[in-house]
Length: 620
Image 1 (cartoon, rainbow, N blue to C red):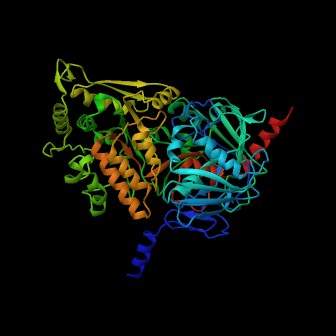
Image 2: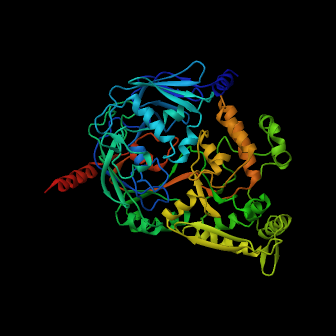
Image 3: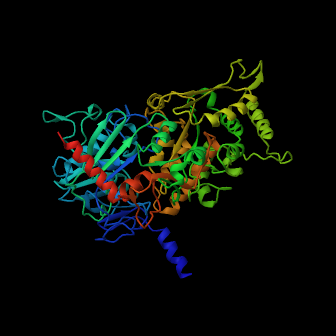
């Protein structure tokens, strides 16, 4: 009983801060003056090189500014070149420790937070990081020249005040325990970045100007659009700081970009880069094989992690009239036979995504409980009746048993009935509305990897009368179309979060639905969703946050805004053997790219090879 009461007190605790750290829900693991994070090796030698590919669809880049909307920034900039007042850890989801700031102090009324900057903090140009730089960074990020998601993220910040040269205060519009983490995680850059004749350029005019950050790496050699290298700053101001001890050990980190997965896999086998995360089960099972793996020149492993499951699915653009009816969206979802795909295409490697917070504390299940109902009941007039009388929707599970009532044929019958209710019937060789217009559907893809999934899915949709087009375009073009919501259906992945919060406003909020460049691809404009988002951002305890996110998940799933895909419970990673050492302690919450670039270190041979390369580069 005593253990239960202690646990209950912990779970219900509010925000906590201790000068050196801040925790949204009172869970600070490391005390003041701790030596290093558990997953870092403070004795790791510096040197050597790590060559990566970005774990995204990025196939080229055209700028060095990751904070504006137009164009694609070089990968790695945010984590390697820029820093923030606080830094998170890989073993605590809602706690951050002082990085640029040596002290964090939250006001008694929790309507403001004050940061005191470390006097030794320096930008790459040797200028000290000052409070004016923090204020300048904030003002630039909330300007119209920045990408719109920053204005959403910092919408509840009333203002920033320079208290003294190394002290800065953020004032909040309302009490929100997450806001200290949000502003503490804001990237800080020099006022000199992009300046001309002593005057700074507008943020959107800073394109290929070399970034002036304070991070452990500076920009290095660039093959524009294809490769970018970052060189470790030998004078890095925080190299002996406890939150950096044993981290960022490589002298050089390089990213290589490829047009498609096939070229990337062949490049890996040819020795063009060192490490890759595989997202495609068939590729992992059949492509990452051969003599090099048999002789252990190349290694592959499935690393366990404690991350919340990623959401992945086909997203409908509900701004288009044909996708506005939830019955139409549900019908399209009924036509996807995941069980067949998992058997025939995925080698049984996946589980079905059920909702937007899968495999986490935040996933809605069954009927709403009393805590959820307390949030949902005031919104009853804005919600579908099914939210209250039906269990949370689950994706269809196709059975091979003809008596189960859950065969693909059964699902297509239900889909046909839903479409008829929505006014779409099959006649004259197509699914048509009362005006006789056929129902056309276009799936957009940038790599062609989804083709083997969309092809069988198309066959099922065509049985219902849909006319389906699958179009593959370059990622840069796709990104431009996504920014202005010029698409019908896309496939998208959202990395799971152990502490969802304000970022959900940008993903599901009404205002974001009409803001170009936002993450609300589905175009959700629902006052009930907006109200639940307010509950999430104002949650004062973790139980309150869990309840509010579960209620949101329930409402979104009743809306059928997407067709859920699949997820895996491990990170599939392949790397070049003999070039790296790994720390003894695995972090709990991590992505392979950042885990490798921040905690691994080079072997003696790797370090010697890079040293010889650098000598050759310096030779006349």
